[in-house]
Length: 509
Image (cartoon, rainbow, N blue to C red; front, side, top):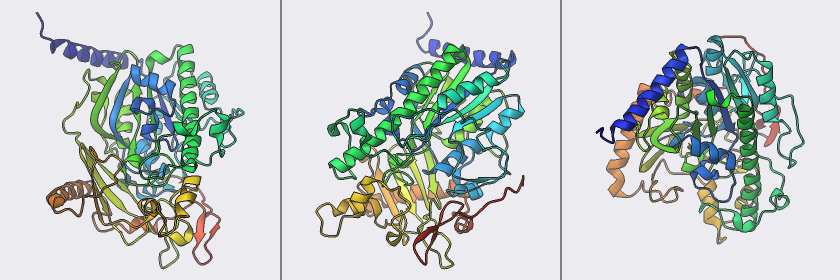
């Protein structure tokens, strides 16, 4: 009689054999990559949410694998998306490490590489950005966003993501595999104010994080956000139906994620759990054993090498992330690879709002390490304001009813500590016990009993960053302050917004 451990091994061997056989016979898998713009991990039912309804994505999670410890590497749109496309860590991206920077054309993207091995590629909605690039197409591929619809709320984009995906499928060579990026512009702000009322919601439905006051303004803002997360879920569901109706779902690897956390204070753009801990759900019929949850620590930089291995191609030498095929095809839940026990995180300049002496914009550089129990954060320039200077309106946090409520609090107000948690300057060192304090409220860094642990975590983090060539750790971090910001700038003499610098494509490097 075979031992119980024999059968998972046999199933895993069969899965790998199926993958190899598919590649050998030319039946290379399609790839549908779905990414939301500013949706928190905890806003999906698969991760325990109860007030945002995401039935389509929850169904994918039940039939696929859920990654419990997936991280974006840098919690802002363009650097996070650059990590996905290049397979590189944020601090290795040169200008693309900054938000609203330039995407260096010396970096190859996985859509470019897949196109070179015979894939049809494209994207709809939001690809890489905001920022500028020298290639003819967006780094995510040729754009398919011309088909429109009438959205249910005023602030939702009129791009019909699913219809554009179907148009791409109808247009492509039916004998050629595809790789498509479905990037919704939701739930990025702005929102239709009080759209939650139109949706028939009640304020009591919202779950308010402990770093916000629990009031009707915040609850209404969270419910407006929830409507847009649900729009993302609807688009993913429509895309899956299109694949199924066309008989393509069986041979399509489907990835569902978000670039970073929700566009609220202390989340988007911030090195706390809600900002960089992202959803990652993968479905691959007949290849992935359904209903699994993986605890390995993975990062956006792992996705490009994963896609290359899945299609049977070699990863590009620039890619510093590692493939997740082992995690996808395993029959186990929990920890698959014991070496994936932590992840490194970082940020540089995200938006304007901190003036240098020459009128340019300063970064708020941070590096961090997160393992199963602890988050250590090194705020490298703690003298700077983490979300931009107050005199310019804390511009590194999106405008919102929640932000307005918090920034109108005054010293002496009963709730002023909420303002301090969200906008005040931060100490150089922060340490949080994620198991006991998942919202990163209680900083343990000044407690003497944690001094050794901080020293060990910082040594581990900086050793790995040096090995990866991080300019900030190697003493040349100011390079990130000197890259050009291509969004709307700030005239620091007047405090007024001025037009973005006009960029002329330079061709390839």
